[in-house]
Length: 440
Length: 197
Image (cartoon, rainbow over all chains, first blue to last red; front, side, top):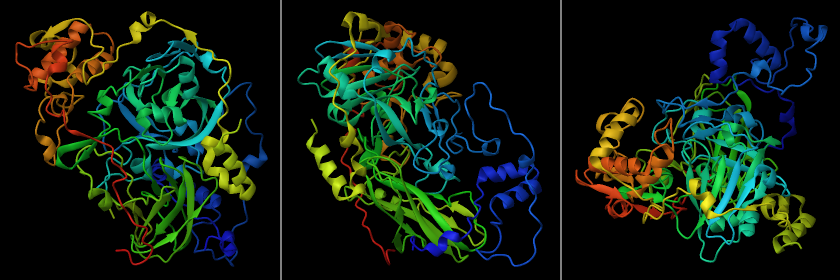
């Protein structure tokens, strides 16, 4: 179906998001609709049928009749003013009473491809964003080592660089939507997720340099923020693929993402990728910090808690169309989404159009990388009837993304539930409105 | 020297161009450079940063001590604005008392008393994070006192308790055995394609 070349000539539809609709109310509604219709090439017309009647002559765009803005002597380029609605947003479901230990979410409904722009990478801080001068920043490695060492940023940046594409996802992604819908948009259901190319050096190089003592099994990582955030990590994972990162997507990290130095733990919950990293201590046991006992543990039956549940398991979500959008007339639409696994690479994504009774395999776009966001697409000829659409990913371990019902067989879905990797259904009404339909 | 994984990957490239894509980790890790750039530093010079507590046995707890009564007066001066009187919850944060026994119900109440498996977590966390507008400002005596006060409010130490590097790790926390190690994958979903529900 995806290889059907006849479909390629069909016009793209306009999918209005909730932010767009908010904007509609605050702008001249008719002017915006005129603009949208022009941009989308008559998207609201009936499905792919060329108009035979006479239409108004195309107006010459005013921008083609005047000089644009000159190139300033120095400037950091920003998105078009017409894209101002594309922004990180704090949760609108679990509203915190302060905004230092809080989070903001990536607008996945506006993401194209597998890379999240630096200004849209999600945030989760425990005491706000520090502004750290890289000239004074230091990293210390000590504990069970032959020789404790201290590194300046200049020291760290003398090493050869390593760049990798990895997703980053908070263990709490989806925490508000388990047994009934609470969030409207995919930004609110899945936006504690981002993808980037990360640049830095392997942690293993520096551990080799300090000389880890025999018997060392766990490392503590500590940040330089006001929460002095700490996590314990098993040494095998750190030696395997963890990076000390100072850049993402081609530039130094943004302050809110750990500038000037963070840990990047591929495939594991974002909380262990300690930002503003200033200390690594080598030990023989975990420290059992608050952030790995009282928090970031998963409720289990019989009042138990699952601890050190690091891996972010295989997951996918349809980002277009998704909650808060509205389809136009019946006809062809491309379903698009993201899939990822902390345990390997994505091998397949299936899509259902009938709430999980029947599934068809979607097309996976290259590149499909280990522990990285992958894009999938599926062409859907919507007949205008109500539908429930969802995606289901499979990873290279053979693991199939579960439903909430599957997870509920082994976990306790109570309170602050973490590691929600279940299938996300969206309902499409006859009028085209798309809504959150968890649990499906 | 190329590793086996790298060689395998190169063979895969020769066979199928896309076959290597998943091996971004092993395929391109450069060898560790010969030179290192770290500067030696003594543990004595690291001491101001070396504040982590191994909470299971209290290793790293400093000298000093604090009582429940001292903890109450520090709490009322520095903590009550956010956490509320008697740690019952305030304008910014929820309760830090109660919840013991709630984990087998559908309303799990998470407090230091109900949730922490080891009492020294109180010391480690209060010292490194609190008060939120002045983290790392409390003295060890103040942190011991606040730990004693919170534990007492949760009914875990008596009103005359004194917390120090010996007594704090000895407090028996109700959730001591409440944790299980990660046993995932726990969900066993099948890949049904037709007639699934």
